[in-house]
Length: 190
Ligand code: AMP
Image: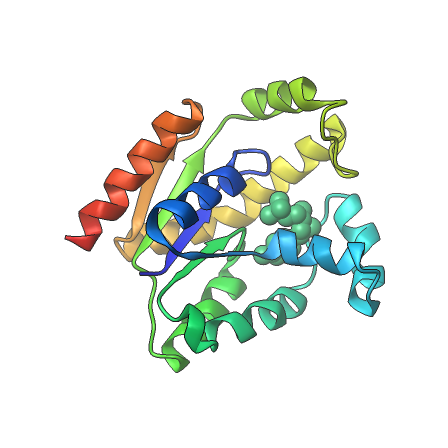
């Protein structure tokens, strides 16, 4: 079972991915996490991307495509991946499909967490001073949300047409969302 989960930045997809990992013994592949790790480790790539990420922009498709390839081709993770924050546009969808095909895998379900911009901003303000990330200011959040919406539209259409898309109300509580997601995953496991 391979899962794609997406939602606007701040929707709680990281939290829900962690719960899916725990409940279904999968491996989380978060491109945002991998990129932040590069920045924290001060690698060559990290230096190259830190200003892009902090400004709320997306890094190039080439960079993220390269990052995920080794996980898809790793036998240990075969049919056990949750893609969190990837794919974010149609180029990435095509790349993901090619890589999965090459490694004899596919996507079983795509979970879309729906959360309004108003709720995201409310959550950011509640979280401020607690665990503020460098890219967490309100203006940047609005920019990231709008960019997410613009890029993700064709991705949603693609997965809708592929009959893989399930929309989950991300405004609910963490446990309610998690229960709904578990139900959906159990449903496709048959
Ligand atoms: P996230 O934790 O998924 O919200 O990602 C944090 C930041 O990493 C994003 O705002 C982007 O700058 C970058 N990023 C993460 N995933 C991708 C992706 N699939 N394509 C391009 N940039 C990404």
